[in-house]
Image (cartoon, rainbow, N blue to C red; front, side):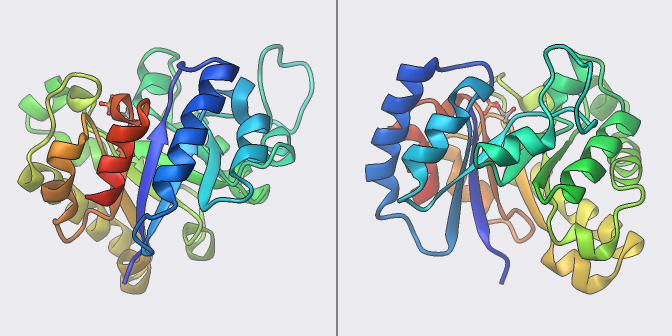
Length: 250
Ligand code: 13P
């Protein structure tokens, strides 16, 4: 049985005091969460150290939204894997569509970051997904195949154990348009098949694949009922403790 994961990507939201407020509320709600569900939060960099201290005595796990691929040096404004580890991060989101599309991150750069995160014992949440244009052109599977192959280039089967994949169709992010459970399942199943071909069937059986894109308490249960959907990467709905807890309980 694969573990269930509900992850909250806060994006560029919540200053320090707002972060403290949200985490305090979440902690009390998550105290009664189902045992087979892991809850992950990804606050902005400026709240990570405090979030780490606040979540220490809870089951909430912590990650960052991005990192640089170098160990350190003259990279003004960037943050390294080692720095994230030093403030208590266990996970890092890499290849999010906003990083790909707004900041121009390539598959090759994302691959470098994934390998660096793994080297440094940070678990990557590796995001992939097609745009609306690509879906309408009927090339969703080609896009996903290429993102998986390039993103995981050089990642060993052993290392893959530490990688979480997140399928986030770009057209569903922040738009209120969720993929239907069938549409999402079709791609999740395809991703699992790609992992089977690239690695092995045990690897495919084990790999956790999250769905992201307008997940809310109202649609979470039907999405999560699909065989190959192991959890959710939540944006907007994770910014309020009630709605995030609603998804966790779904
Ligand atoms: P929304 O849930 O706001 O659509 O965002 C999804 C997402 O990008 C999570 O990483």
